[in-house]
Length: 232
Image (cartoon, rainbow, N blue to C red; front, side):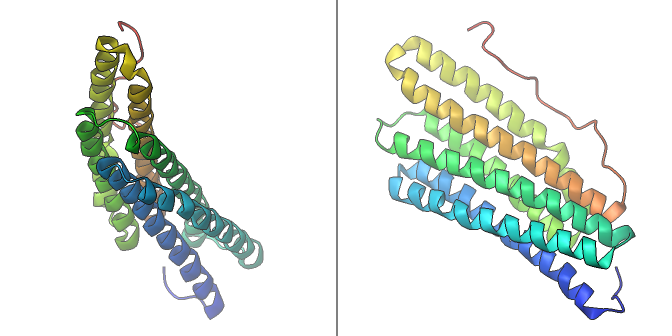
């Protein structure tokens, strides 16, 4: 996109993208902090993650107000309109990532006061995978790297498979010792939140591809088999 005759229009577009990048940075930090809280049984860090969610909500409102104002006043076309509409979608998605990270942090508070279990390491591995994909998709937005966005989009199945593995592992653990049902439930909530963050990363990848290419990425993304309680 080249410069516009009205320079303030360019300033507005830059401001919208800067807010999205700021949201991405906060969401990434929240997820990283929540995972550290789970790994280290750190209730204080978990509370810090929970507190940061308010800032993410505030920036989402800024993006919504700025983008809608620009659309109303400037009547953008083609790539500019695509960017602004996509920014609204990305802001909403990143806000959800923050909510899910906050949920993980809340579970971390519970886990910090419970006895350690070996299953926590599986959760941390899944968390690192999910965090890595979120980081990559945010990098793809900054650099407009559609190849990187597509790579993240295709690898969501890895997060799905990790979730399914943890689900089986935790349910077996709870069946062997019913006293661990409360603890196991918390671990399942963490794993499910991570799986949903993985889905949101793929949505971000689809949006980035649309911003750059102007066409949808497609609907044939590889997905893991959904796993329920059947057989347990």
